[in-house]
Each structure stands twice: as C-alpha cells, then as structure tokens.
Length: 128
Image (cartoon, rainbow, N blue to C red; front, side, top):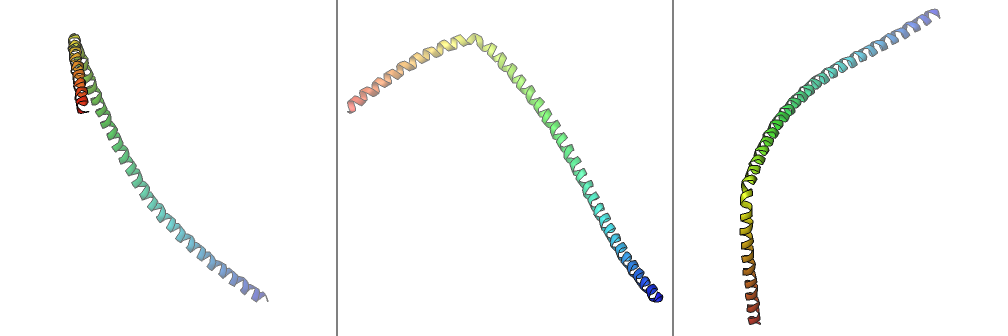
C-alpha cells in the first residue's frame, strides 16, 4: 500500500513535471512571438518617426516658401499702391477738365438719344 502510494505520487509528480515542461515551452514560444512582434513594431515605429520627420521638414520648407511669397506679394502691393497714389496726384489737375469734357459729351449723347427716339416714334407712326 505504501509502495503503491509512492508509485502514485511519483506518477503524479511525473505528470506535473511534464505539464510544467509543456507550460514552459508554451511560455517560451509566446515570449519569442512577443519579441518578434515587438521588433516588428519597433521597425514600424522607426519608419513612422522618419516619415513624420520628413513631413515636418517639408511643411517647414513650404511655410518658409509661403512666407517669402507673401512678403514678395506684400512688397509688390505696396509698390503698386505707391504708383497708384502718384498717378492720382498726377491726375488731380486734369480731373476737372475731363469732367467738363464728359459732361459735354453726355449732353450731346442725350440730344442724339432724344433725336433717335423721336425718329423711332415718327417711323413707328408711319408704319401703323
């Protein structure tokens, strides 16, 4: 009976040891898989950081270029404004004469319009 009990304990111990080996092998495989996945994620992370750095550099260059373009456009607009102001000052002396000339042309055009209107009315009466 004691011998049987010892044999039973030995068999149980052997089963436990075999199970521990299975668990250890499974844990080893899981660790290897996790390490491989970690390495793969590390590569992906490194690539993502590199891509982000390149994108950041490109955006910085585009921003610098945009600032330079805006500065150039601002200078161009200031220059155009100064030219327009100079032209306005130049035209101030001529403005009254031009207005008088245009008023004369307007009076003449109104007279021609009235004459054409009368002619159309006369032609309309003759047609009917």
